[in-house]
Length: 77
Image (cartoon, rainbow, N blue to C red; front, side, top):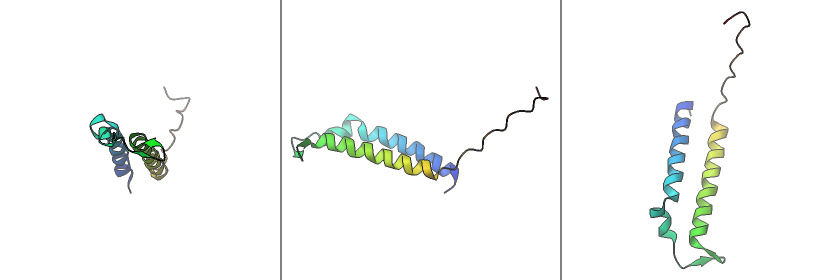
């Protein structure tokens, strides 16, 4: 993938993370059910959190490194 597409994917990932944690979507998982003794809402939030971390890690490794800027010559002002 080219750098511009990966940067757009990183922006999309940020927006997706915000949308997943907003109350209108998170309230859907606010049920009285429990899984392994944990409320379903807590599991949903941790799965979203881990998914976002995993996606950010993947994107971070795919993005090429920026070329370091060369220091200016002492003769130039």
